[in-house]
Structure formats: structure tokens, C-alpha cells
Length: 251
Image 1 (cartoon, rainbow, N blue to C red):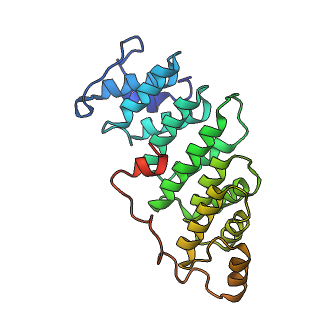
Image 2 (image 1 turned 180 degrees about the vertical axis):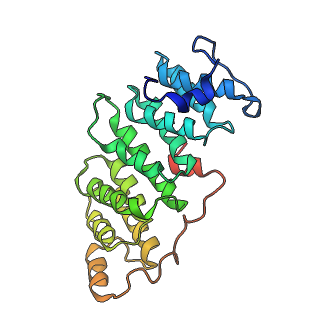
Image 3 (image 1 turned 135 degrees about the vertical axis):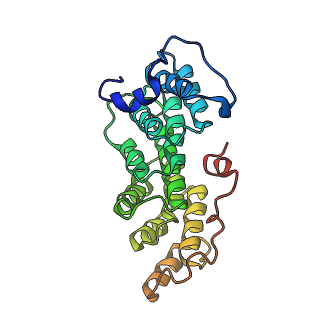
């Protein structure tokens, strides 16, 4: 699997070797050689628990946002046969806040060559990762349209409640009228969880409330010139909390 990944991984992996036992050092004691072992384990180990553990250990170290580590996690996120390993890798990619992180997460929704029964879990994690990037202003202007197009499609077409909720939350970070209209449509969904998050995103985008009433929202859109003049007035999620991970991923 390392073929074609070459120089980036070798930055860490020279002399690391794959056959060494699992390492659990304090994060600040982890060396480049340790990081190299974690990268190799994440990419190559036959046991999914070992791959996931390697990513978890990497995420705690000072190497977590290194280009080689993030690229390795991007590869794992796209290709691993375990949903739990993919979701761990997605978190590292999102937390890096790298300019290309949004593109990496968008690729999670491309045609997948690996059959994973829990692919929904991977996609929800990817939407949550995109939300975190948006929350931190880390979705570039060149990616915002692709991100909102994806979220609108999920909100409109996906059958998963969790997917729809993640998409509704994500749309709340982008002041776009097409997103507003998608969120208004979601207010008519039969699941109140979806309706709640759609309304909340509308509140955050516009600074007004219409109590989950799709007709009232549509009338407001028609009668309002600047739909985002009040943006942030009711925003309760714009500040990244110290324990953002617990909020975004619900752990």
C-alpha cells in the first residue's frame, strides 16, 4: 500500500520497521521513528484494531498535522476496509485544518471500491469533519460550492436520519440562498430531529426564527432582500469550544 506514497512516509519511516509491538508512550515522548511505525501500522497492519489504534496514537502527538501523517490518514480514510478505521482517519484529516482537507473529505462520497457495511458511518463522519472545517473557516472559497451541493443533495435525497441531520448542520455554516431553500424543505420532514436542526441552521444563518414553519420561512424569503443581514445574531455554535470533539462527534 505504501507504493506511490514513498517519500512522504519515508520521512518518518526510515528504520521504523513494521514488526514491532504496539507502542503506548506519552504523546510528548513520541519520536519520529515512533510516528513512522504508527503510519506504517495504520497503512499496512492486517488487524483493524491495530490500524485504528495507530491512528488514535498519532492524533495525540505533535506529528498529527504533519503532511505525511495527514496524507496517510487521507489514504486510509478513502481505502481502508474498516469503517471504524476510516472514521478515526477522517478525524485526523479534519483536525489538521489543512487547506486541502475539505477536498479529502469530499472524496469520501465518490464511488467506493471497498464494500463496507457501515459506509453511512463513514459519510456521517465526513460531514461532521466538513462542519468542523467550516466552523474554523478552513473550507476554501473553491470548495464551498461543492460542500454545499453535497449537503443539499444529502438533505434532499438521503434516507438516513443521521446523514440528514449532519447535512442540515453543515448548511448552517454557509450563507447561500440555495442552502436556505434546502433547509426550508427539510422542515417538512417527518423526523423532528431533522426539522430541529434545519430550523437551527436557518436561525444561525438569518438571525430570525419561524418556529419550524416552512410556509412562514418561504414567505420570509420572498419578502426579504438581504437574507443574511442578521447572520450570527442567534448563532450559538460559532465559537469552537475546548471540547469541540465531544460536541461535533458526540463522544
